Image (cartoon, rainbow, N blue to C red):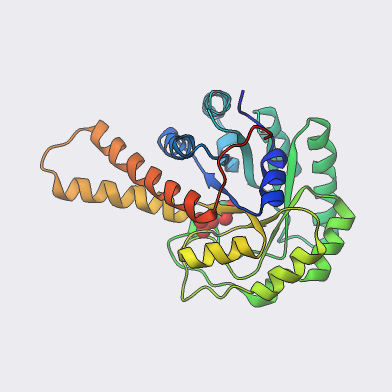
Length: 288
Ligand code: 13P
């Protein structure tokens, strides 16, 4: 039974100063890549689904597979709903077995973000589910990930709003905007480490970094050293899988579907594995 809450995973990461990778999946191949990489390393992992995964006729089948895969995992795994845009999506995530949900009210007026986050927390905590929220706004959207995005310094999280938001909601962990973007970067990322230090100093909860793709290894190490405990990572992983498939198609005269799947999965597993190392994720301990 390795399906745990995100709080259990992140509490350990915060105590021991490492980060855990949180990888988005929308299909079985990517899920197996993420889970296999984590199981080989013996490290905890956060498996994230996006809102479309809990909609439509396939939702029940896909979510049932994910829950069962997590339960059978040899490492602790939190099944997390990433970027839920409403209370209703958070409830759907919980209904389908997520042990953690993110309500993303970062584009809403402050009071509305607080009000919905509080409502989500009330429901989620009653079900033993962890809640993440976002204050400030991490630019870029997954749907637009290939076009290139730039961080907007005016949307960076301030220490005051982070602290006030924590006091107003009691959220379990908080995503902050400090210079990363979702998707591919237009230009060079400019991370505000001083801002991160100041936020970390004030908040007693794990701090989450969105837009994990596109940084160099040194950036990740520095982010972890400055107190990031959860790193959301998607674009580079899916592009690595797609690139491996492209290469296979271009270079191999004859292949079958299983070769395509194997090539994509292997490339995704390799990049996840590399980032588990760079994030400094510690192997499972008896007390987790
Ligand atoms: P990237 O796609 O930029 O890695 O960001 C992922 C993310 O933050 C998902 O919430």
